[in-house]
Image (cartoon, rainbow, N blue to C red; front, side):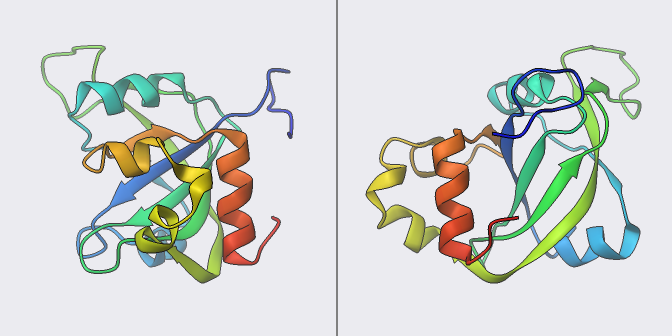
Length: 148
């Protein structure tokens, strides 16, 4: 595993987005964005764990249902500045694109691979941000034909 800037083991995440709202192509065009709009408390818990230097798979929901790209988290999680109530439970972080996958990995492929039995992606389909264990991260990259 690679090391993050703070000398802890690097963490890996999967972030879901509806491509009609904000796609990986939009992230590539913008060069970076604030990853926001998450309201589910379980997903927010995972986002609070993110640190600058961690990596994330970008997953398109809707008709596509596939991991389509890799992004780097470029800030620690911080309170969502769009919320007027200042509730620190609601967090965001900044991300930048790293690599578009030449071979997107579909949800169907993931569900058919025993390496993902019990994973949040399979068990909690509506969770928009989740931690990805290192062995599942590596398996998705292998399925996509990349090693980063």
